[in-house]
Length: 123
Image 1 (tube, rainbow, N blue to C red):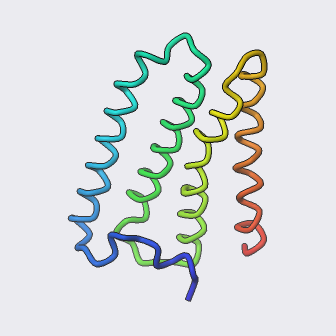
Image 2: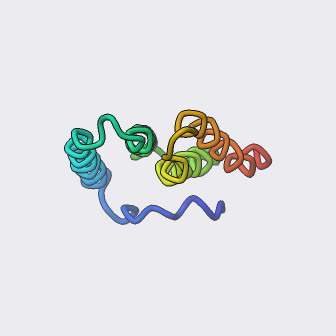
């Protein structure tokens, strides 16, 4: 059995209940991000905000895609790749100072690719 297959805290719930929780968390996270966007416009913190939105979209899309299906071997790899996106906003925050704030976004994406190396090795 794969070590990453049993990480879900929603495992004991029925699939409709688990999907409702995922959707509710996505809506609440999206509302919080949308509300904070107004105060970030014009600052270098807008890039970490975009990375946070992209990470939330990746996490929710992955869980909605794989939520009620049987666990195949590649499901854990896809969930790992989605979980690795949670580092995007944190890394973008490290480079949120001028003048390198725009070029730093390439480093953020490169970090994610480096984090995916173990997935590539197992596949």
